[in-house]
Length: 160
Image 1 (cartoon, rainbow, N blue to C red):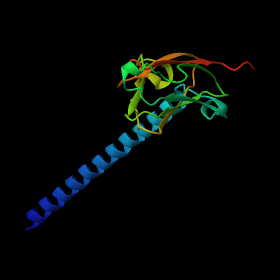
Image 2: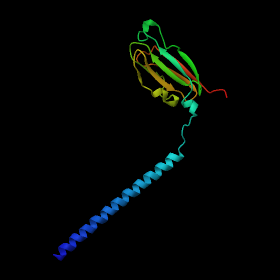
Image 3: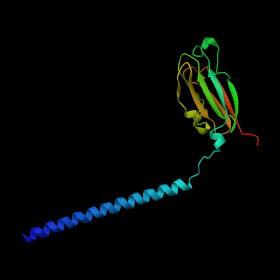
Image 4: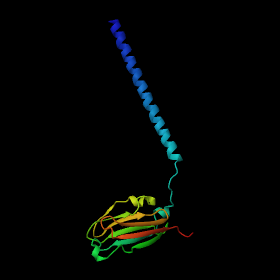
């Protein structure tokens, strides 16, 4: 029986040693992950924008008129081409007055600020979609559902 007790004690000690080793490895792994995250978080450059650029005091409204879903109606975004100024009115709000939903998309997926990747559906008859432009440039866009609807947003820096 003493051999049996001795074997059981040895097994428990071995299991406890393995558990401690696993816990130590987990703690070390988590510590490395946290430390790496802190280093990456503090050293990577960030897009930083002034508060007035992110939350401009004014916005510009573009209307998707009633009847826009019919190519024969010869209507377009109103106004079709707009110019906005960073920190002044660089949020654009599209208002859909049409009876069909619309999806305003950038003509190029690689447009700055993620504008080209937008796929938000604008509900019909009063639905809205807003986008705040944070970088200078020319942004050509269209309706995914009705490609004859096309417009341009030109974003300029403020004269300071």
